[in-house]
Length: 314
Ligand SMILES: [Zn+2]
Ligand SMILES: [Zn+2]
Image 1 (cartoon, rainbow, N blue to C red):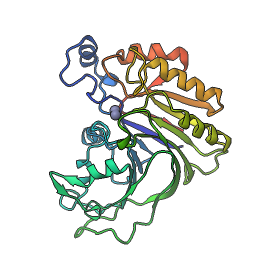
Image 2 (image 1 turned 135 degrees about the vertical axis):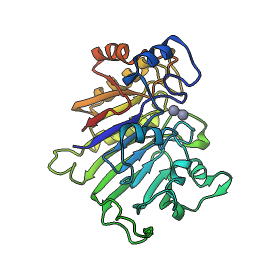
Image 3 (image 1 turned 90 degrees about the horizontal axis):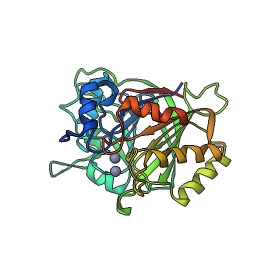
């Protein structure tokens, strides 16, 4: 089974929000647990990281998540709640005591420009053991991870071998998001694992739609999704932006109502597998009820909210 781990599930300001004493934030602090949300980020298996946001250190520490095996990163867009460039800086010599596999980073030009600067300095890709791949919306990628460690890895003196992970192959379609300025090239991702132990013996490849920080899907996005459906793509799990919660509909994010409509439209178009696990994701205290009330609100629609540490098997 493919493991999808939500490392964070909150919007930019966190939930409870950093400076806020509203009723929802106060309730979240009192109840704790699934009410406490870091900024949104997710891990596919142990090797594909989506959105290295500002809470990466906190989430990895809190969840006991080992990120050393990560060999590929997809970045939706360079807003600071989704991309914290220093995350990559901590891969440099002196901050890591063991050898690392090379990390393939797939991100827009704007995101890569952020990753390659730290404290006003230019950062060479090789110093962070990374290969940087500029991508845009509506592209097809094949991401291969795992296998024997690559020869260009520089092993620190006396260090252990990098983690050896099985060979895996992911097909990714980048879809243009309705969010942020065009120069940021905001994207969301359709991902399916076509090779590797999790894909073996499956009638259809395990498939995920990760669609946060987008308003209602554009016509071009729907056209691409319908084309994917014709190619046999069926999502086993979805995670769709729900930033506005019970608040007003939006063009750059979604309310719970808009999110649910998108889940139903995906089903109507035959894009969901029979056992699809449908998730709302990226929550703000401004419109989103506390976790327990949110679960109750979404249950009749067969949708679950994401929470920090949720592991979905697909
Ligand atoms: Zn965001
Ligand atoms: Zn954003």
